[in-house]
Image 1 (tube, rainbow, N blue to C red):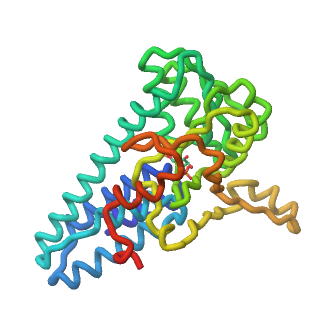
Image 2: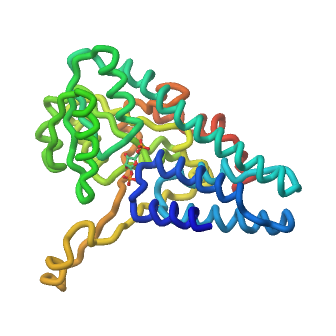
Length: 308
Ligand code: RI2
């Protein structure tokens, strides 16, 4: 239980962050919890697993990778505690392996869209987008990257460090310089926290501004998204909740104290409409946003009736 709570706390505080990483961390936490919990009956087991799943899912509301990972991991069919435990452990191991393989496939597929000499713009810090960029570089393509700073938490610094360590020339810009710099960019590639059934992309705040600027400049705009980042619940008409985080991330306590009448907001994600997205690079192929429904139906493995 302690380890489960630790993981939940780390996801909530963003010590563990990134839609893919939080999904994998949740699968690991559920696996270890299922492996060690004591339950006298399948009913007890079921209640404990449901509570654990809820604890993890409630940590962050937007990245659909989290509920998808929890749902795929916590399913079992047996009415025997030991067998159910085993099923969850196997589900988690399978999810973790598939998530890892997906990153590699996204890299291979996405790298085909990157040409020798390209300047790539990226936003925030996405393992999936980085997989595309580093795979293209590994193929010998002479590329460089413009990384946006990504206020307020400045994940662009993580991206810049990763790329520089890899040997890829990288320029950091403030978020508001994105449109100014767009004329130098050949391709924009970002990650995804969620893809809705209409192909809309939910990703780090500021993504939609990049998409708008790319659209205006006729620059390719790609998102890299594992299939487990597509949202089944949007088929039922549900909205994807946009997380509003603490305003302490925007301004420090002293500044806030000096401006008691100032309203500050900190939405963590925004929505990019499908018409601004050229392709979604998934582990099962590079698809147009209009294919989102098919991906959800064919690759997420549960029926609408099961969700309602
Ligand atoms: P990968 C991150 O969210 C960013 O929005 C990033 O684009 C997305 O997750 C996907 O990241 P946050 O956790 O799964 O920083 O591709 O709020 O690594």
